[in-house]
Length: 85
Picture 1 (cartoon, rainbow, N blue to C red):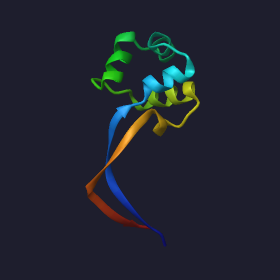
Picture 2: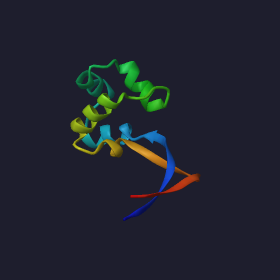
Picture 3: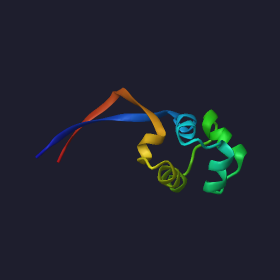
């Protein structure tokens, strides 16, 4: 049996600007590949909109990374609970 402490997490920010720069890609190019508007991608970067689960997976494929790598995650300490399996 194992034990793991699970805390609540939230997305602090999306890492698209860094990933776009590393890939030499523009927001417009990413929007085109994801079949989204430039405006939507801009709003995602500003934190006003979120990518769907499917679009997050597609973006991870485009950037050759894990879905978790697209976001900066923050753990919320007060909500931790222990899970045993």
